[in-house]
Image (cartoon, rainbow, N blue to C red):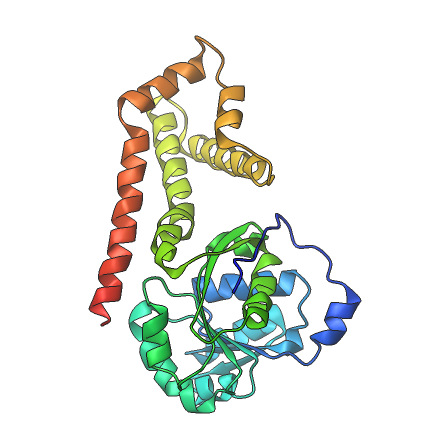
Length: 298
């Protein structure tokens, strides 16, 4: 297959021709936690018909809340023991949204209910395509993805890899769902651990930076609430500037770093402390941990 790639900063209106062509499409979300929930909400925000979606959750209370919020069909495992199989049956695309350790068991659970041409999309880090395919019926199309939570805002980043039997058309259908709410890149599977380390875990790095900035503000004498608000707004604003596909992080940094100014002094301290190397070590550790999890799953 070709390495098709696409990006979008904000959801765009969907054209009526595509709407008509996809009117009968059924999309199932097995599990509606942080990541699957973000994907689900991003797809709805981009204009998907709620009647085309079905999700499963464990508890009845969560099912009612999600149903009320989104208008989609939600099956609760507490009420429907075979909820995952029921949701997967007849679906064109099935998103697996449980923790990595549970992905293979979930695949075995739904394998007999899936249509042969249904595309199974995993959003779990570290679970390989071979591990997913091995728990499904032979020939079941699989796409492994590494999304992140800013999909909810239309500002996500997603890496995708195709399984051994997924067709270009099937991969393109998954790409189209994701690209309505973020940047999408189709990559070789061996690059997905690196994608996970940069964009999958990346939002936590930005939040961590905001925490550190807020603590620094308190140390400089600002009230805690003010320091937190300033740090939050600053990181969010900088992120919005980076949302432009043409944005160059280095150029944006240089634009606010006047020679011999206050920002230049701070950047010099960061460089002296080895911040770039520290970030690189953290990303390597994240990628290595993903590989460890893959090995532990067999």
